[in-house]
Length: 370
Image (cartoon, rainbow, N blue to C red; front, top):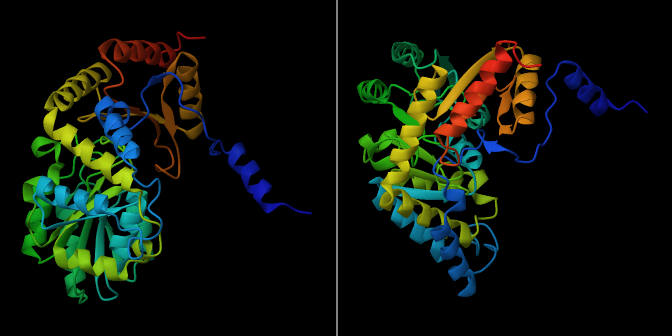
């Protein structure tokens, strides 16, 4: 019997695009655990205390059934105050949050204007939305404005601008000052995915969009599985849009709620970000050292450009063999010919580790290594 699945996997292998699960091993240059909160003793102890106090191990259902626990509501109240927003909604993952957002708020007569490099989960939500969509050149505010002008000319009702604040594969920063001004000028909404900024960048590590919080045309998504070291996603948004999502978003209504333990962990992580600013300062110090050492990047994410998928994969394997956990990023995550090593700086390394990786990388790419 012909097996189309095996045929496709064989083709992916031939094209050097096949993926496989690799356990974490070696010095961490690949995780998103930027502040090393996945290993924070205080957060761990808070969870131990909660479990010893009889906290439920699971949520028991969706949040509209029996799965809505006091811990979820406590976290949302804390996040509302912490980020200075009107309301917050806790969801199981950033992917589900993006899906919920774009499939509900953007209606058939609307248009979503998105940065061409916006995260895949946002694109999935946008593609599933009934709204029209248009791309603009990466980080080009003028191109964004021109796309909105065209949308208005064809009669778009609401316009939704979709961007990341720090881009996950390039590590560069969106021009949010320009984009929020454009949103104001054209009566549009701005949706900012803060996944790689929350805990690290912006006022007190609250993400770059925190400088504009409280506006009725701003929605921000704060992923909890990166610098916060936990799981889930907090969406900060106007109260009326929160209520609308609760009533209409299928990826919220028809999924099991995050565990109450997860809500406690996220709230405790936000408290650590607030109370231990030295972590953020140290991360910026390390990132600056890496940016200078490798001559690339402006944040804790450094794209080491290679080109071909096979070349990037081979380079990653050579570095992994020397004890560095760094991964190749290939198509379709990045365009053809733009494969790279994604170098992620976290508090799980120090300057000595960065220098050692730089030496190994330089040796391999200069042809000195065997």
